[in-house]
Image (cartoon, rainbow, N blue to C red):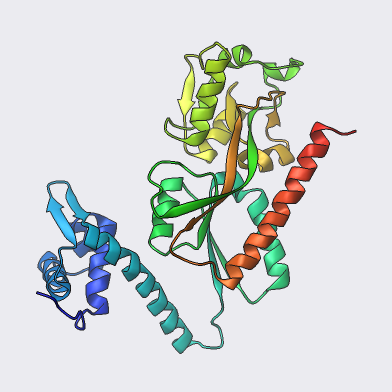
Length: 315
């Protein structure tokens, strides 16, 4: 039976979005502060009104059906638009454009802050929201309409509906504390690194794959003493306090290098380069504000690449 969907309300969409966010009806009811039966009733009404099944229930929670995935994508956009409409109505004089950027640690401390500063110098009336975290987390926000785009590397798995524009290649560097024994070495090799504790991202990440390839191509293993860490704070403190070597994109440790809390070892390899760019949804066009920021970002990237070239070849 085909239905019009005219009776779908914001309550239906909010309950549905919370079920998806929480993964099951019980946690959704707790988050919404309503009974589980009320959550179940709202979901049932929504599915009956649309004439489709949106969620499948199982022992491990709820999963989206293809119809549910399509509805989720557009429902997220609708709720964001509705929230902005309320803000505009309540305080029209204060409403302003907001750019929502997902920034991976690779760029959160380097090109993105400079591009944001350039944008704010031109448009002080706009707002900028920066969210950082693992790629999968940011990609989920992007798919849900809660981010405009992601700046950083791109994980090649599960990228349906997303597109990637490469901007430059970021070098993966080896950093240590200033008194580390390797600082006295004129050159650092994979064998030399393997003799010390290594801090690397977890398996499955782009950076970890490149690091593993580097050690494999060098004919040595990564060593027996290695620590996987997604936390930059942990990696930073551990490397500062131990004789460990942290292998990370340069942008991730740029602040530490500028402050002198960590130093870079003389390690260079074409294998240790990770592509950095912009990830965006293929079904959504950039706003004028987004386009303005991206142009400024590309300008910062050109300056960075030019400066790197001068360092590599000062002549």
